[in-house]
Every structure is written in structure tokens, then in C-alpha cells.
Length: 233
Image 1 (cartoon, rainbow, N blue to C red):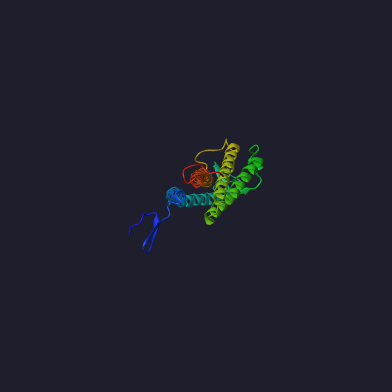
Image 2 (image 1 turned 120 degrees about the vertical axis):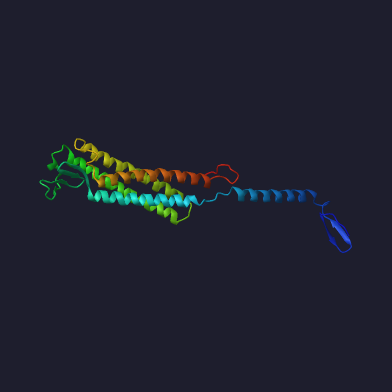
């Protein structure tokens, strides 16, 4: 016994429900089709975290860790410039005569350079503060990768901004040191610890810019509506 697709069959009798609920059945079929299409479209447009994103973030964290170590060692040593028989540093002023041992003084006024004592105090304070700020930024970056919650994007952005501040402070310390000793500075006289601080400052800047750029791309992908429209914050 044959029945229409919109009916149901009992023994020897065929009933059709279409005459009773024609609009309800038609609308129900349309709604189910639209729901299936929406689910397929949602699955296609759902943002996925690529493999390169965690790798780039891990590389940024590695660079910032290296920058913190280099800056810390450079500031602790503090001997940044060798001019003739004098060694200028953040903490000490050393002299040598007849290839003898270094004679270091904490009183930088003995170097007879105008404004060296007060200016060097500012330079080492700014450079030390840059390391402190960078440590807090590194902590926020690592914390954002450990916890996958909605606030991880905010932690990464704040950490990257702190690295940008660390770059400004570190570069300010370098510039202050070079300005104070501008008459004694030579390219060959700058020591390895000075170039370590310069490298750390460059890594701070590189990590800050890269971190903010990666975070902006990932944040844009995460707040995009499944159908390509911008979602409200």
C-alpha cells in the first residue's frame, strides 16, 4: 500500500497529516534546513589556533628571557667603557698605571668628569628599573600561556607593553651613559658588557613589537563573528 511522504501508515489505512498542518510542516522543514546550514557555516568559520602561533609565542618568551639575563649581567658588571688607562662603569671608576691591577673607586667624582656622579646614578637606576619591568612582563607572558582563559589575551598584551617600557628605560640608560662620557667614547673602547646591554635593549624592542603584533592578529581572529561580522566586545 503506497502513501505520500507526508503521511503515515497503519494496517490497511493510510492517513495524511498534511491537510491538517500544512504551514507548520513546511515551516518546520525550512527551519531545520536553515539550522543545518548555520551549523555547517559555524564549523567552517570557527577560529582555529594554528601551529605557528604557539611556536612564535614560545620564541618571543625565549628572546625576552635572554634579554633579561644579558641586561642583568651587564648591569651587575657595570664596566662599559675603557678609555686609555681609565675604566668607566655604572658603579665604579677604575684606573690602572704601569700595567698594575685596577684601582677602583666608588666615588665617581674622582673621574673629574662634570656631572658624572649624579648622571651615572640616573643611568644605573633607569637600567635597573628596565630589568625589573622586563621580569614582570616575562611573568605575564608565561602566565598567559599557562592559563587558557579569556584574560590570557589581556595578560599577553600587558606583558608586551611592559617590554616596550623596558626598552625605553634600557635605551635611556645607554643614551645617558654615552651622553655623560661623550668626550671619552670610542667605538673600540666600548666593552662587551656595554654591547650586551645594547643587545638586550634591542631584544626588548623586538619582543615588544612582535608580541603586540601577534596578539592583535590572534585577538582579531578570536572576536570575529562566525559569519565574518565583527563581534561586540
